[in-house]
Image (cartoon, rainbow, N blue to C red; front, side, top):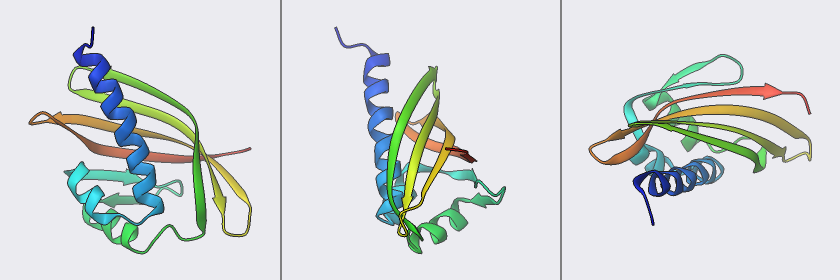
Length: 125
C-alpha cells in the first residue's frame, strides 16, 4: 500500500537530487520554480543569500565544482515541513575534493514541495 508519507519521501528524494543537478547545470528555471519566494541560503562561508541573489549565483555556474556526489541523505517529514540532512563530496576541476553537509528545509505549499531554506557546512574529509 502506498501512503502519503511514502509518496512524499519519494518526491522529496527526487527533488533533492534535482536540486543538486540544478546546481551543477546552472538551472535557474528549476530553482525559480522550486524555491519559496522568501527562500534563504546560508553558504559555507556564512554568506546569506535571498532567492534573487541565489538565482544570480546559480546563473554564474558551479565555479570550480566539476562534480558532486551525495554520500548520505536523511529525510524527516513533520506534517507539511520536511528536513533533508545530507553529506556530499564535491570534486573540483583541479581534482581536489571538498566534503560538506547541508540541511534543506522544504515546505508544502498548495500541494507542492518547495525549498524554503538551505544551509551548507564544509567539513573535513
